[in-house]
Image (cartoon, rainbow, N blue to C red; front, side):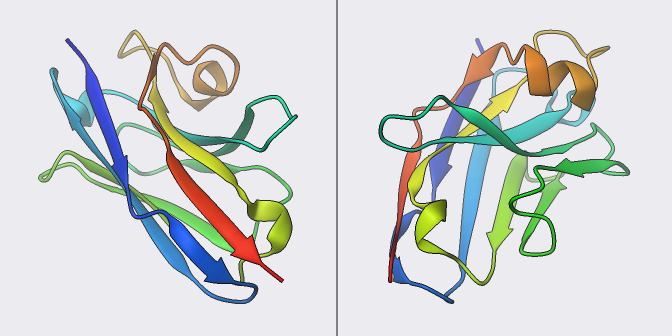
Length: 126
């Protein structure tokens, strides 16, 4: 049973930084692409960033490129999202997600994530 548990959210001011973490369990973490999504009130859930199983490939939404960095520590079964220069429009619930199959890459993850965490709230005040 795949479990994903996010942490690190909070209330910050515009321009501040936060680092989110996602602890994964239930299968071999290092075999699966991972990613972050977010959902703001009244909006659909959107892709933020993805990383391949090895960590060698990453992908970002245009809105966060240059400000957010996704990374993973396969030895610790943990996914991270470093968020710098936060903006009020980054306010959302942030979710960790992964594919159903190890053969799924970031392309699949962006379109059909299979497993989700419970989310962590990020609020950026102006």
